[in-house]
Length: 167
Image (cartoon, one colour):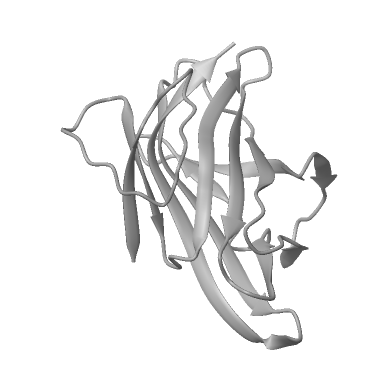
């Protein structure tokens, strides 16, 4: 299990450069855990839209693996956000590399060349605008080699303690 701690910089934006950064506990620090160390999240932020009671989780995703396809779960194990009371918020839509992805079941295959960052936006609905942070976001995925789809590795990201910047 890979765990990193990040500081919020420049309006909730962070850069992840493969380095672990540790600090004393404070409200401006969040953590990213990944079950596969070869996947990298960068520039993680949450922006809230008060008028629509939505939040948008934004990040860039890359990996250091050769010839792999990333498949995002959108069915039973779809992306889920949790507040401090344990209330669940399911995703409403996913935008990958500026293109909306529709999916309510199974997995969405996402092509990410080795070492290239692709933008991911996950929107969650029905979020109270008084919510100051998301305690946990869980994103499940598969990795499979491009030539053998049966050779799958199941993994997940956990992103904890993310402040929401409301507009």
